[in-house]
Amino acid sequence: MRNIPHPQGPLCRPLHINRRTFLQALAGLTAAIGIFSPLTPLGAAMPTPAAGRPGARNLITDVPGLKVGVAQDSRVRTGATVILPDSPAIAAVDVRGGGPATRETDALGEDNLVQTIDALTFSGGSVYGLAAADGVAAWLGQQGKGYALRPAPGVPVSPIVPTACLYDLANGGDKNWQLTPPYRQLGIEAVGKAGLDFPLGTVGAGYGAMTGMGKLKGGLGSASIIAANGATVGALVAVNSLGAVVAPGTRAFWATPYEINGEFGNGGAAALAQLHAQGEDWMVQEPQGGRKNTTLACIATDLALTRVELKRVAIMAQDGMARAIRPLHSPFDGDVVFALSTGQREVQGSRELAVLQIGALAADTLARAIARGVHTATPWPGSQVATWQTLGG
Image 1 (cartoon, rainbow, N blue to C red):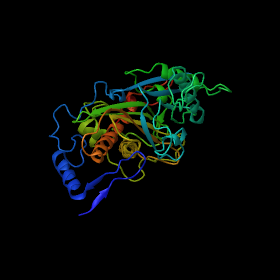
Image 2: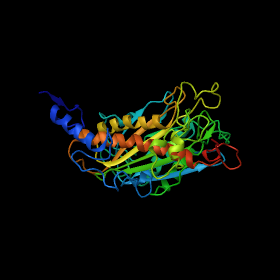
Image 3: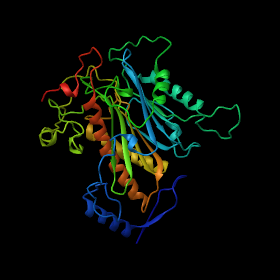
Image 4: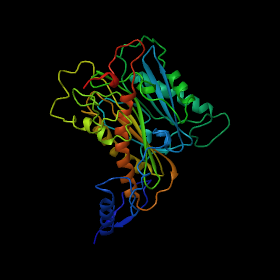
């Protein structure tokens, strides 16, 4: 009988699991809840009707310990979104797009000094949008929130604010900002508005977003789920993908199989019947308006996972993007998924199965959030941009 060693690392405790016992437990879990359904933890009973439901808001802020703020500039057609934990949160990141615009993602390595973040920022503006983090860091520093190796009077703290930006420079807004791009101020405004409730669609980092090679309005989306064991998973996403979120010639979301309670149009069986993907049906012609894109996402949970475990959750959550966007992770996208934990709920039992549970929930929840962002999107003032609401089919 062989033992399976637990992966080693600065945040991983040594652990040996009997292979037969682990496989028997996993088989029992699978048999009880269906193939790799994430809603029931090891050894628990079948889900009650309350299990697997969205949280009260169906937003990432259903995860205890999180707030979100959004700000936008309608003249420039851009915006910023800030995820603000009540206290420093463990975080990890997985980057898969071919053209990312990021800041402080290297700080999220498991072998680095600082193991928590003070805020997470998403912005439009491509490389200009990285300045949104300057505003967020300044606001946090003013509040005395940030890392200090040895706190001392008169020495500012160093807020840790990982940031990712999407490309919305060619959407027709006034980008003639010379030496004063609006992103620092947008960051300050967004973090100052952080709360439990926030709007979706054409707001925040999703304000200037488009999808499907620039043919359909993108936006800011969010969703949540509460597992049978009480753990909460939330997703927030700014959808600006080169790929399409609906099947060609229809308004049926690729994410339709994951919809809960009609949260993005209640397409049901009619929408499912339209989901037929074939070869290169997504590229009717050479891409024109959709060469510079990016989908930015954050997965959050209240389960106390380590940075190494959150990295696996972020990797698994990328599959949620693939369930909702086609194609994905192209050379023209800068797709990024962050994962963070507020640490308010301890892991009970196997940590490996806890990661499996949260990662599987994260993928489904992210797919739902993507569809919700596009479903809620509205045109910019005075524009004729196509939205999901105006689609035929």
